[in-house]
Image 1: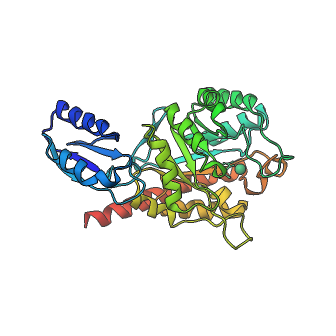
Image 2: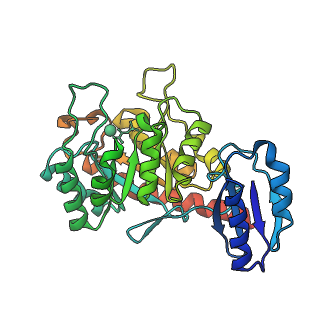
Image 3: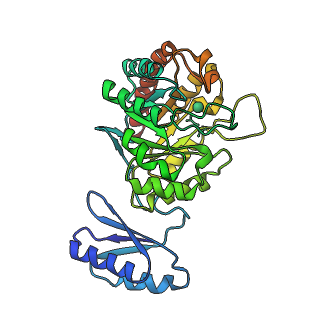
Amino acid sequence: MLVAMSVGATEEQVAAVEDHIRSVGLTPHESRGMERVVIGVVGDVAVRRDQVMNHLLSMPGVETVTPISRPFKLASREFHPGDTVVRVRGHAIGDGSLAIMGGPCSVESRDQLLETADAVRSAGAMVLRGGAFKPRTSPYSFQGLGVEGLRYLAEARERTGLAVITEVMESADVPAVAEHADILQVGARNMQNFPLLTAVGRSGMPVMLKRGLAATIEEWLMSAEYILSTGNQQVLLCERGIRSFDTYTRNTFDLTAIPLLHHLTHLPVIADPSHATGKRWLVRPMALAAVAAGADGIMVEVHPHPEDALSDGEQSLTLDQFSHLAPVLREVHDQVRGFDQSLVAQ
Ligand code: PEP
Ligand code: MN
């Protein structure tokens, strides 16, 4: 349920409400807007619901108490009507700007990473991606450079000023990854690894949660809820395609998920057309489509020599292709925003 405090509620009144929520075995989550404080109440109220609601309503400073209908509470727009803005190294994601993220699927060597980092930086990207710990379908495929890869990412960050996103595959690796990266990526295969979700949440770092291979929107948002319920609000959602009956593309890009998520949740949405399509020549049109659909950011795989890549070469853009794509993404973003704003003004 949601407790909306009145506009003039004092800090003592807010604290008293939160104390009461805790005293009945529930957890308060505060959201501070421009005017008022809204407190999300999380936990199993079940049979006590009416009693708890009545008591809260009678407390000084409380304006309304409303049940939240969605199973994902902290992720819902009901709890947090305004957009969440994720802050990374002085940049904002989800504030209406477009975050462009590029880099190789895997960090393969220092030279490969630094060359790619320089190129994506010059193209105007804000975030460098690169996997050091790789979740590969086959145990015989390249598994990533591990901590050595993390060190190259940190060096690239130092050299270019780009923020770094990289995947963390297990809870034990969270401290090492958090030390070298700015955003922790939870991969599609780990979307429902609940201990990992709690661990990345507790790190306090921004987290990008990829959609599971066959996850419904609701399952995905319930996974985001695990991270949010640790008190970490810095969560990005990444649509990277889902499994369907078609085999021509690697996955089926669920473009509808982008505006749908904006409707259901306040969390920023990133699109990954590389994993969604699996084919280099499909990345550009789908990246443009994702921006037009309202994505807050685009993550694309880029490699200096895709033909020699140790993973996902088939879907990686060349440095040159990325440098042509990035400005066009910005142009589409500006156009769509301008168009939407003129409609709102009417
Ligand atoms: C990746 O980003 O390289 C990756 C492994 O993605 P996903 O988890 O979406 O397959
Ligand atoms: Mn990949």
